[in-house]
Structures are given as structure tokens and as C-alpha cells.
Length: 394
Image (cartoon, rainbow, N blue to C red):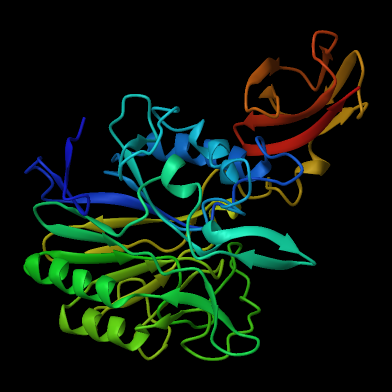
């Protein structure tokens, strides 16, 4: 297990000198939690699927990096519903966890690091308009401290920045509130202290915006008014200047739910452009989008957009044409019809697996008499992918 030490609550450093080369996963915009089903929603089930996939990658990633919007409404009682996500992490019952205290595998060899997004600050939604606070009510209790921090290795420094709550740049344009003077000072110090290393920064809002593609590769519809649209208000230009002067390799973001890589001027460039800092957006994790980042002493290599828990022709959009179950609502029994072999889990609203069904033939009959009335989720796992259906038990 990789060992990490927290220094001054701001710097995490690995004790393993063997990190001369490593890879990690970038994901963003998990948006776990559902107001209707606060403890068992589709996005959390997808999270469970793809972290299992990440843990099985070869070579094994050194860690997973999450750039914000972990919960859909982070300040909504109870607890921002972060427990919807943390039930699938190890250990599952931490209180006030430190940065990197969670892992995606039971052996605790692959830590997962978080930084907050604007949805972490939301308290509710009124008439489709979010009510945003400027503090993180539940984030610290369930996810990680409410502060910037850095992870360092022998060859790289990875900086995690809070890009802030919703703030209006104009009457209609909502940005992230941005970086404070204290954050800017701390960022300069961290980068200068690690001047000889490869430099990676992650925050939720893109520092530079441009049109890219959706998770499925179709053009992103926008609108994007300019390179600063949906970025940060305070100290944006200062941040870009710091990236230039300190030769930052990549800035990893989300927020827009699209895939794109740009330079400072907003020109779209390739993932492995070598002309300066690459400002990289990765589309939403709830659409199972991710990137693999490879780091060595000479360059940081970024993958094209990837998708987890998906096989061509079998995805959320067409799952209903392959899988069916009836009746719904159900009382004493359920009939599952599916042409593939699969494992079907019946999960209650607390995330507990109540039944596991081995679906070996096109039709499977399931007895439900021992389940109490309520709402359940069906997790369907086959060789062709993973998806979720809702079941109502009368």
C-alpha cells in the first residue's frame, strides 16, 4: 500500500521513491444523489461500476482524481447525500476524512482525491434556479477538508484548488467565484517549491473554455460566449499567468460536461500538444467519461476521452430494448427478460444489496415476498455493460 503523510494539512507527500513514472484517472461531475431517492440513485450506481473497472486496470493507476460536483446538491440535508458515494469507497464509514483517506479498492492501494465543484455549495433548487451558499456544509464531514492541498511525488506535484461557489459575472452569466489572494499566494509557493517537477493542477471550473464534444463524441451545443465563459471571476488572469511562468503542464477540469483541450488563447489543441499549458476538460462521470494521465520525468501524456462500463450498442440509451422486467410495481414476484447472462442485484434506498439473482437463461422468475414495500434499484451487470432500473415493490 502506498503511504502518504499529511504535512500542515496542505501537502501530501508519498514516501515511495519508485514513483519515477505513474498513471492516474481523471473524472469529474459525478452528481450523485437524487432528491426522490436520496441514498440510491443511478449516478452513484455508475460510480460503483467504474471504480471497480479502474481498480482492475493494468497497469494499476496510482490514484483517481475527481474535479468537483461530487454531489448534485452538496448542502442539501441530510449530509449532501455524500454517503451515497462513500458507501462504495474504503473504508466506508470515515468521519471528517483527510485528503486521500478514501480508496477505490478494498486493499487500500488506490486512493481517490477530491476537490469541490459549484454544486457542493448548493442548498436547494427553487423554480429550477439553484440556491448557492458560500460555505461547504457537509463536504468536510464526508469527503475531504475544505482547503487546497497538493500531492507530491519524486517527479510531480498535483495541486487541488477550490474554484468556488456560484457568482454572477453578468446578469445572466454564472461563474465560479474564483481564487482568493491567499490561494494565489499558496499556489505560487507550492509551484516554486516544486519547480523541477512536472506540474498538474485540478479545479472544477475551466480556466479557459471552448467548444468540444459530448461524452458520445457529438458536438457540444454550448452556448459558450468567450474563453472566460463558465470559468472563474476572481484572479483568472493571474492564474493563467502563474501557469505560464511556472510551466504548468496540465490543468484538469470539468463543469461543462464536455471533452476539450485548449491553450491559453482558447484554441483547441491535441491532448498531447507541447506548446504550453494544456487546459483540459473531461466530460461528466455520470456519463462514465474519464481520461488516463501518464506522468514521467519528461512529459505528461493525456489520453483521448474514454468511457467506462460501456460497450458499443449497449448503453443507457438503448438498455430498455434489451432488458425488461414485469410487473412494475410488483408484489410477490418479478419476471426478468434479458438475452444475455447477467448478475442482477436488488438494492434498497440505503444502498444495501437485498437480493442477488444469477440470470442464466432468457427468462428468470424472482420471488419478492421477503422484501418490504418501497423503492428499489436493479443493478444489471453483464459482459456487455452495466445499467440501472427502478423497481417499486407494493
